[in-house]
Length: 251
Image (cartoon, rainbow, N blue to C red; front, side, top):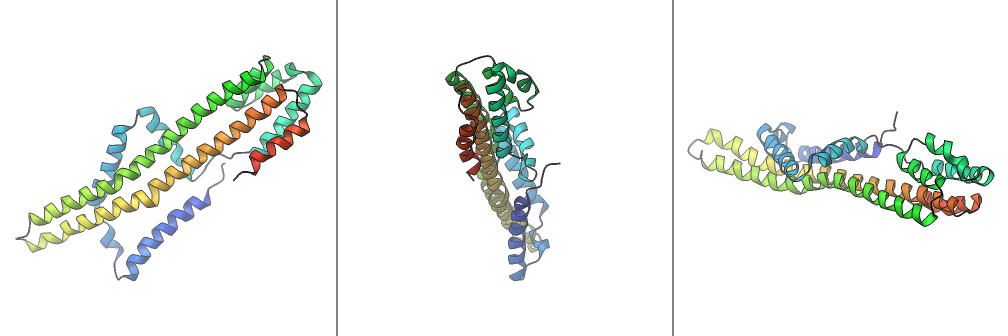
């Protein structure tokens, strides 16, 4: 089971407690912030606008990646370095063909492809070029998934304003009936709160965290590429280990 990212949960809880706690300290009630029509306008309008601008495969990937905010797959830099050192030692003892069985058994598709290029006897720079191109394409794909939430964070406050205007229109149309003014005003103000809070407490932070994750994955792929290219260059295993340590030390 993947470890839970407690910082994401803590961040959401702190944001919620800050809003609700501030509202309580001002004498407000939680019920005053609960408004179904306002939520429908903001959430539905935001999702609809983001879906309109996003291709279906990209949207599916974005929804899949949402789970990574709370349970991200581990990135094992030290384990990757240890594997590369083992592969380097194996290549020095048995030659590059000795890595063929290792390449076939490697579970990560990216690393397996790099090992297969190595076993096939490709030049180091050819391996680097192919794997860097694939890594860049993968990173771009992950960043596009993050931008789905970033776009929602841009739309959400605006949709909140639309909800506020709709509430005010409702109020203006019922000036002769004071009993109907309250609900309209509630929709107007609560929709604005929903739009701004959804964007700044959830959607934009989610986008930023997914972007950070995409960059970390790209760094891991760069490390694996550099290690396999170093094996192709015939570098000493100890020298390879020292060179790759810098990748693991980055935050």
